Amino acid sequence: MALVQMSAIPRFHAARKGAGAAALTHDGQTISWGELEERANRRARLFASRGVKAGDFVTIALPNGNEFFETTFAVWKLGAVPNPVPSKLPRAELTAILDLVKPTLVVGGEAQAAIEFNALPAGADASAFSSEPGDEPLAPSWKAMTSGGSTGRPKVIVDRAPAERDTEAFVLQQQADEVVLNPGPLYHNAPFSVTHLSLFFGAHVVGMRRFDPLEALHLIDAYKVSWVNMVPTMMHRIWTLPAEKRTAFDVSSLRVVFHMASPMPPWLKEAWIDWLGPERIWELYGGTERQGATIISGVEWRTHRGSVGRIQGEDQLKVFTKAKNAGRARSEKSSSGRWEDKAPPTTISARRPRNVPAAGNRSATWAGWTRRAMSISPTAAPT
Image (cartoon, rainbow, N blue to C red; front, side, top):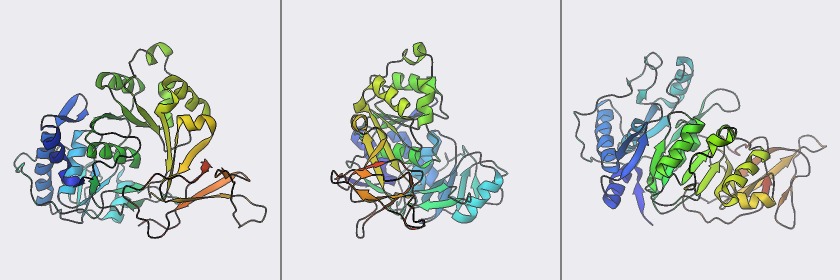
């Protein structure tokens, strides 16, 4: 076990892998672990000069790029909590989020959108500040993600896990020191989480400013990417490329392709399984609130077509169905351990048993199969 504060991850891997080892690449520009450490230290001092302190929220309205990651590590170095939002969010929508978060600082975004707040523009110069490490208090939460919620009004989902990580507690089939492609926007929970987890494990993260199917295949080929997370729309755009273009790239380095965030058409999943092999295709079904999740491999999916897998760790799952007696929900579990839907599913409610922490390296014992439902509803409102 190697529990490391997220603020110290860049210098941890710089010492372990070498300061010159690649950490991040965007737009062909690569920065090393040593450079990431120095840039994050400078930015942390810049942010501190604007009033950021431990426990504060910092809203990050930056596009995908190396600067985004320099900023998240700088925020953690001050013991503060990053709150990523779209870089071009309209003023009314950004104001609604900022009124909830009440950040000490807004980094990036449209100048007019954040005009009433303490703000720094994208690319703010921090070169006058020291690149040496400073005091690094532990942030009480490692992220505060936003969501439209069921009402359409923004909500902020503050993760209760502090900003520290066991760098050997691998998740989602990840491994140490591999090459990871991020094709998704970093203000979304899955891209934010999996790319930072990859960095915690020592990966070289290759990022895209915005998704393009040919560019994704080119980056997989050029950097020998071994792990990628996509949404079904991305996989559809890749699959519908002319065959001669899609097969012109070497994607043999891919070890894992995860997909999540929206329903996957069975025909498309089967096409990817046939293309890359069932052992490489994985699916996660869960929510930003981390109220529970299911995972299934392509191998398992072939024998449980339409399933989204088994509930993970100590979490529990109940499938609610439409019953004749309105207002009552029911679910049954077969003797085989598989969840059997007795009517069209409407909601899945997942909960964590009492006295089981929301974070940490929990065992991967599974408790039955489940089919996809229309939505996931937390049993308690998020903070």
